[in-house]
Image 1 (tube, rainbow, N blue to C red):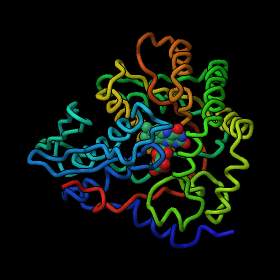
Image 2: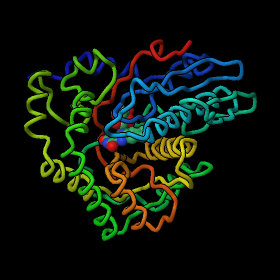
Image 3: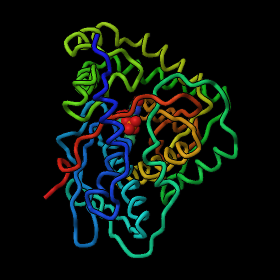
Length: 337
Ligand SMILES: Cc1cc2nc3c(=O)[nH]c(=O)nc-3n(C[C@H](O)[C@H](O)[C@H](O)COP(=O)(O)O)c2cc1C
């Protein structure tokens, strides 16, 4: 078995550190530290006369897990939020718009009247923590602060702490997970984004490194064989049931309308929720299966009484030790001409 090795640790320490947010490359650095689906980093950044444009990189889309590109645009929203917080750290304000022509893009105009937000300082602390949690409840005052931090126009966070309701949501997680794990296209796509050891993760600077989920490090050929043998609905469902039951509660990001502009807003709201949680020492991870399978998403919508509003992302939160950090590609590789 290959160890995680000092290189990976060194690289993550160097990556998850401050840059100059006054510089364009510094702003992009903070943007790329945002959460994003499968760590595919389907984004590119362009300096504009007004500020920065964030463009989708459709070559990194996930046709099986994210056929409508919902998660891709939500991930762009996460990056936009980090970028605007970084601009604020140097006293700049930002106004964001989603341009709908073509593949769409986020246009951020930078101004002169911003201020530093405490969420900026949490950018380096945030991570998705995919381990079992310790079952301790999160205090109501912290939950209220996370919910308030996540408020952006067009979307809100619904919190679920009632154990009966959590079990009902867990049932939807398991139903959708069974459908996904049984779908060869979904499994093949996921496998292509898995990095079974540190060397593979370092080589690409993207994807889902096994160490971040607490899985053993394996040579790539063996990892692929083991994944084929062990990635089965029952085993995965047991893991998700344990993880959800060890969590303090569930948060669902919900947006008013189901279009790309609102998916971006949902990403922004989620990123702010995650940053506030990190600032308070609270962990979170995604259990998005119910929003990724359309028939199950409708069940979740009705369980939560959302009417026409779209449930965008499903998160569990609670307390746990940190896990190894994820990697990113170098900033220079995500700059668009
Ligand atoms: C829109 C979106 C969807 C995501 N979906 C999942 C998911 O279904 N399961 C999961 O474990 N993580 C999910 N994530 C988390 C990413 O995998 C994670 O952000 C990425 O691997 C980088 O790791 P980090 O956030 O710890 O830096 C999602 C993140 C975003 C922004």
